[in-house]
Length: 416
Image 1: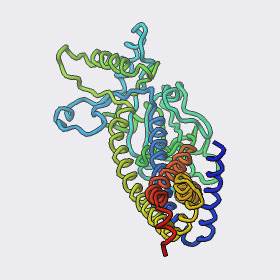
Image 2: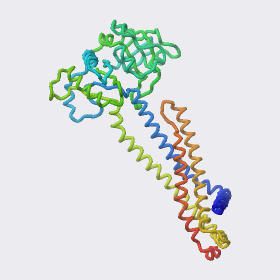
Image 3: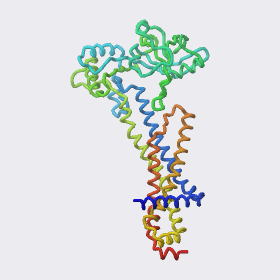
Image 4: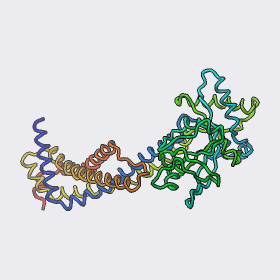
């Protein structure tokens, strides 16, 4: 064991001496590994960021909420079976809540009616088009995961009285009232005056498509006064235990069939949607991106490995006479093998560390430039990058090192 350790230390010393003696060649050789590690770690960071952004988006929808709507989420081929379905109506929430309250051990908590449309919000000369306006009840506060930057949601009394009050998304409030509080101010939503009673905290966008910060929430009774609620309406139902979502979904289907007085054998004239439906649809897409991305970045590492192998072969040829001398003096094959393997692995490790530093700098730069992007540099990625670097060094350096260890000392000493 002591002899092996001595051989290892000596091989380590010789390997690093060769790297120092050929700094430029070693740097150019490591460049292929650096590019490969940067590509692999950036891809891993991007995939992790996509997962984090997707989970954040699902959390905004609520993983303990079921949506009763006319259309299912995702594409449908038999669209004609859905086109004539009735829209969910706010009065159905009253009947549904009565059924939930009358069901012992129900997995459902309550239903909240939600009507929605796009509106124009204006303050003096400032105007925003395409603001997502939601009409709902005060129970929406218990359903939404959004926190408040300032103020509150409207109360039951304000909702029942049809008061013209609203809560604005963070981006809407910032655009209309830059640098000052919007609480107590008046905004015009589609020409109607509303007092601002709350501003939601910044939430971000759902999958980069729909911004939760571009909203205005008003009482449903007020919404009904100025808008036709027969289109774009839905019921959102809170579930007691999200681990029993499938059971809650079945209960909700039965309750909705009672609400709409559907007969046995009749096809459901509504859809029950949940946030996990997006996950089921996008998981294959994420897997495809990961496979293609890792394949492309793997090619970069393969090119780097070929460079390491080539330079190790060159190093063996240059030092053939040295190898012959060492073997003539009693050096074992494993010592020669270890020497060249350590040299190859060391170059790869140096390249891996430089690649990690570059990736970390790029990730930090992206985080500062685009804080909305959910990028992160996980610790496990560092371990994986170092493991890949060692693996590349061993795989690319083994054959030349093995050939060097098999050289006949007599032939090696005569090599010119």
